[in-house]
Image 1: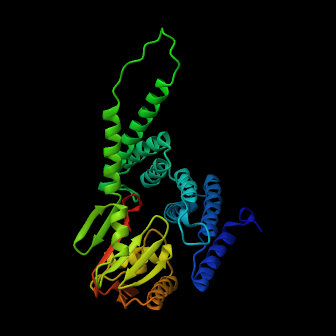
Image 2: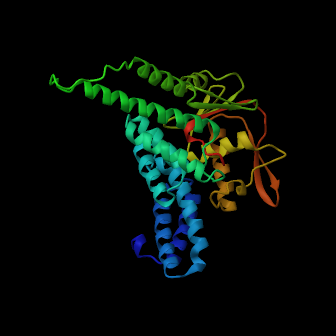
Image 3: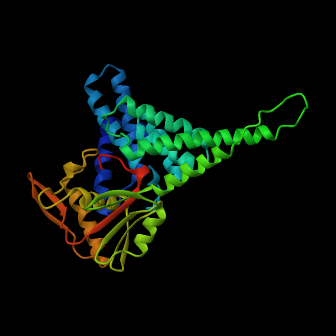
Length: 341
């Protein structure tokens, strides 16, 4: 039976079955989960439209889960744990259909459009992102301070590229002898483009450790990962994969594992361990949380990493924390940070 032919109760049962399957298999099915949430939103929206107001809160809750998965996991819909820009673009556009005022979805679409030299699209998306940021300054998907700077730079640079392209096309027009073109000097414009792009490249990634956070280039991150400091954990969210290194040991992590480990390294301690409730953007069952962390710990152990994640009880929940046994660096794109992570 197609998802579209199922009742809301059957869709809820399917969500429960999917969660159980993911627990057993140890791998999330992002594609099915996103399609399931889309259908649940459609079904709940129909119920609300029929004056069934008791379903309004359920509609908003499922929509939040759908938007989160579209933004966070949309680029991982294939069976391999590698990002795909084309999938990301599709899912980010879907996210804006459900949440047209979402700043980070528009921002990421602007970044991807700029990456592929679609400057008119990039300009529009960055304008939308900055406008949406003003619309809901306390929202869940707001831009951080570096993203705000970058959004303005990307927008300006996109406009400069469009102007440069237009100028080149104007100079290619056939001369009629009756139309006189202005003699504009565009070398300063080209210099501005280059200066902006070099700035964006130099500040493309965050490099975070216990001393704080600073920006750096992708090349800086690649150099640090390939030549990690002694006795130091290095977690690198590359443009395609998520990798961790320590004293010659390396492992590739799934998206869930990478985000979990990043949270433990940056947000947890023995005094403030992390329960499943820390990930309030999506509901996580206690058993699912425990199994996900256990699989992460097992993978690290199998790859030769020392124990770095400990468990405890906190507020009547199973909780985990980074044991601070070693210094660390976490490196990830500025353009991909969401403030609640």
